[in-house]
Length: 395
Ligand code: AMP
Image (cartoon, rainbow, N blue to C red):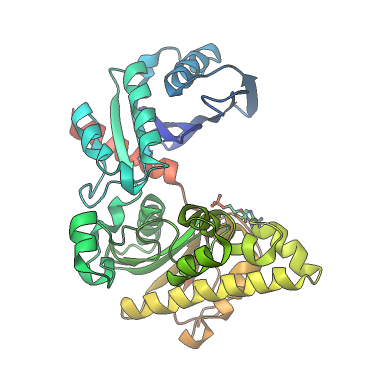
């Protein structure tokens, strides 16, 4: 069956058309500046890239254009060939513990969590509604970033703050990147042929989070109430003392909103280096001796290493560490810097094995206490797998 894996943002829509269960990517693309001047899209198919500028006032128009193009480019011959659409949905609160078939009623329940992810959930829902209209006979499935983390216990997800913050306002750790961590856990568990693995999954991309997973269940994860928490990231600070906000508000007159925005968009690698949020630029600058770039790399690696050590403790000793996403899959320098900082756990990198990018590989030495693998993530495929499973259950 052909399935679409979709990620709708406020002004964008990313799609992958996948033939399942063969896991064959037929086409993919990105619609940008939806609802803005100069909207355009790119579709990749058969090794060719098609880019066109078309006025797209909203997501419904973008989806209509996508459907027309899939037929015009002979990617499919009729819309009935798309049997299902899987949608990335950022926040499912405590309620959505796994992927679900989307109906109007379920969408209303998801909308209850819009306040928890105001930049993402309303856009995700807009995308779903556009596909419901364009493909009324296809199954629509919601796959949540938060679901995989709903197995965490109170001891992990509660913040030590007044209890009513949680009771009245749902302030707790939710965690994100759940679809990626679930894919990593599934891939490594299948590869090692074990379903009782204790895994430290490290998703290190522009955004980044770690998850401690025991026998397929998340025990703890580093992002929190929002994706701002945890390790240092490309532009996010990760964990900082919350009192900084009041202090900076008094010192600079900037509002809480402005300062939170700076923690999200102007901090992390970008904030410390003053150069870029992209670890490739930081690596180039560090190689040229730029001190702030070197400092940014060192803080970055140390924060990740500290979480690995903490999660090894929470798991009572991990069986395997997996590195994934843009930096984890591609940067041998950052991998080395991180692994060097957990040497007290007996974890050892094999530098010859580490000299590559973008593939599934073991990068630790034979005598490393915990094996370290690079495992490329594939959230689009995980979404398609869930969509296929729910489609076959509903038949
Ligand atoms: P992601 O958010 O998973 O797409 O990761 C994006 C980040 O991966 C970029 O911002 C880069 O910092 C990083 N990245 C991608 N390719 C490389 C590479 N070859 N070397 C170092 N970092 C890379």
